[in-house]
Amino acid sequence: DTPLRTLAEAKGVYMGTALTAGELTGTSASIASTQFDEVTPGNEMKWDTVEPTRGTYNWGPGDQIVGFAQQHGMQVRGHNLVWHSQLPGWLTSGSFTNTQVHDLMVKHVTDEVTHYKGEVVHWDVVNEPFNEDGSYRSDLWYNQIGPSYIADALTAAHAADPAAKLYLNDYNTEGENAKSNAMYTLVKSLKQQGVPIDGVGFQAHFILGQVPSDFEANLQRFADLGVDVAVTELDVRMATPASAANLQQQAADYTKVVNDCLGVTRCQGITVWGFNDATSWVPSTFPGQGAATPYDTNYQPKPAYYAIQTAL
Ligand code: XIL
Image 1 (cartoon, rainbow, N blue to C red):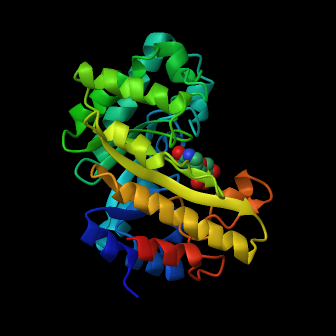
Image 2: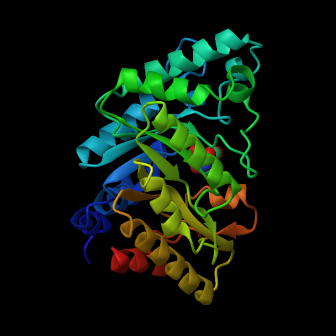
């Protein structure tokens, strides 16, 4: 029973999981460290956690994840620096001027990347910048800085840690559609302007049976722009309780995702957004849905786990 991380390493990719600070002991710690070689903090590096009060940093929870990763030879994916969600109240209700918002963003990116310099291998610098129709999401950053906030965030991150691999990350961009076309156009233009961008993350929060048939082709067209790609938040949700047939379909969906990544030389690896159904974000976010991960609520491997193992 070869661990997923060993199989992944042999194929030149990583196999990651999201973890929260509460999962660093017991069964969950032992499975995570045995099976995975990259970790993304589920919440611990988000702005509301790291700077709950303006100017007062709370690095402890993120540092705990980094310490766990280092202890077990796992890489860290930093998540995330600029997003519309999980922002501290002082920032969202602060009525700052456009210039202040810009400067606060650059300071945040600089301070966080500096704190984790040399410890975070991949950074999700900007998360979820687009609407489904490919227009920019109307958030604090776009509304008060304009689309140049993305280049400014990347530039600040690169200055703080030139070795870190800098990504843009979004969901529903896995197939070719209006949203992924917008991401494609943006990445192409950033590359042309010489803005430091290393990769594009595809969250891959899938619904059972709905992995886009053109996922691999879409990953390849981004790779052809000269950037790396990664599957950053994989899960496959279904109605609960799960039927045996649906768990088999889910296994097929996980197989397809692994094959799609392995089919693209520049695909760096796959991260599942939580490795077990006990702590997955799905049931609380999508009522009636769950069973989205490779391990069940008792931390037993599901058909999806064996599917990943076979595909790697
Ligand atoms: C989720 C976390 O898993 C939850 O614990 C939290 O309450 C909300 O955020 N896309 C992302 C992740 O980029 O940061 C989100 O994580 C899931 C969707």
